[in-house]
Length: 361
Figure 1 (cartoon, one colour):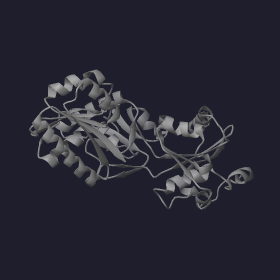
Figure 2: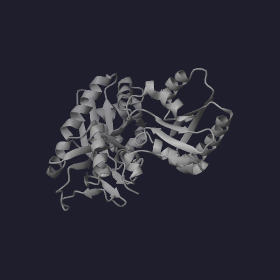
Figure 3: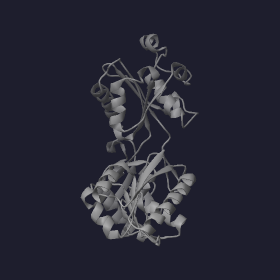
Figure 4: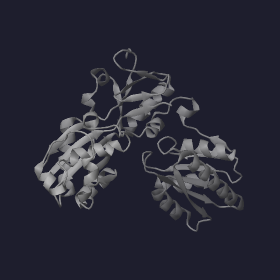
């Protein structure tokens, strides 16, 4: 996996800083295993044009300049914190690095700290939770690959934490590490009195979570843990596939935003409707050979028709479980398949769940 960063500078000293930043990103890439691709620009002819292009193609922008130049340049292109890239400013002597935009969700704060550590610069971070040394819920959610469903709720939870009020936590998956003091685990044993807000981590619709949480204000975070195994007739349109999947997930009470990937047999690797559906969810589509699917352990619903066409007795269930086994080799039908094969007008759907986990480590 890789990320892209665009760096712009305007002075001779700034050009030297670009070289230092490139070295720092190379070190960060080696340490994290996540490659940073650096796109550098020196004295762009049209700064606004450069910024427009950089905003749409990069995960982060760094201005080696005065703060004012950066603020005036990015202002016309701001959308919202869930989509704007991280923006940082570094003075052209390399003494300070400032987190300007998308500090939590975009990762600007973390990147500011990482670059400062490598370059010996002073990090400037102004977000309230960080200044007060409190849990930054939106940043934590991003690190745990959780979907933020409501930014207004996230803001209110952040305010609760900054002002010293406890926030509840309900999670239907494994929790690693020490739960921060700002949170109270609501697992049926701890008292929820005096708590106004609860963070709910679940891939299920909110009506499926415990009754106590429905009495509180909810910040809902969705873990991306579910795999769709899909089979379909040749030439099935994307809309038909979506309708089938949405019906199955609705009946199961599963939110579609929890889908992390789609899997099928390699005979379907060129099905435009299936590929378009995966693209619409912004998730990968993985395809497995007949032999791969036959070797998936477990007893699956048999279909003679499917076997005659594909050589495999069941595509959707086997593909879903096979996808989970990429990260959990011990998984089988019994341990991870949460929705067995459903037929929906030429589309078959099954759902398998990866082991969910949130971490405070």
